[in-house]
Image (cartoon, rainbow, N blue to C red; front, side, top):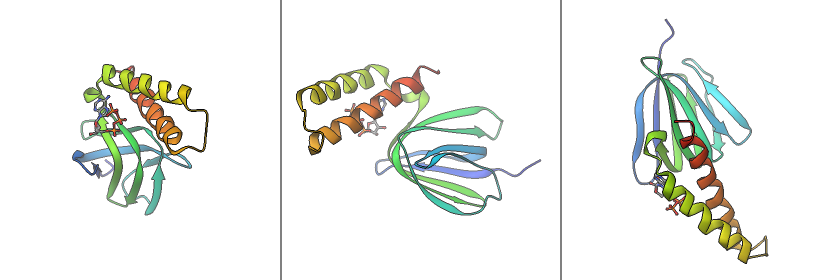
Length: 137
Ligand code: ATP
């Protein structure tokens, strides 16, 4: 049987995942990538989206990740995300409220180069990805 890899998902606030995985799939900025044990080392930036992995028992697990970096080594994947939480921990009402706030800000601000506009767009993207991932529960 193939060996497992160590998966660590951390944010500035907390450790979200620290366990052995059979395979890890993550949303790289250049596209989704998969890592198995023995993978060639690489470093990539991440998009906001869903990280998926199979745990030791072969069960699929899902984690929301909001941008950051992933480092793959032959025996481990380390994800440093700005924010992250397991699918089961997503509070859909909170994400819907965040989406509404962001949409309101986007409607009120027509200037696309404005820093608040860029922040609101990123907040809306996080909220939409959280809602979509929670809907797969
Ligand atoms: P909000 O405006 O609701 O705080 P946000 O997108 O600005 O949303 P983040 O900055 O991405 O929030 O995350 C801040 C912290 O709150 C992180 O620990 C993140 O895991 C958690 N978090 C944010 N939104 C949710 C949610 N809908 N469900 C569960 N945890 C969340």
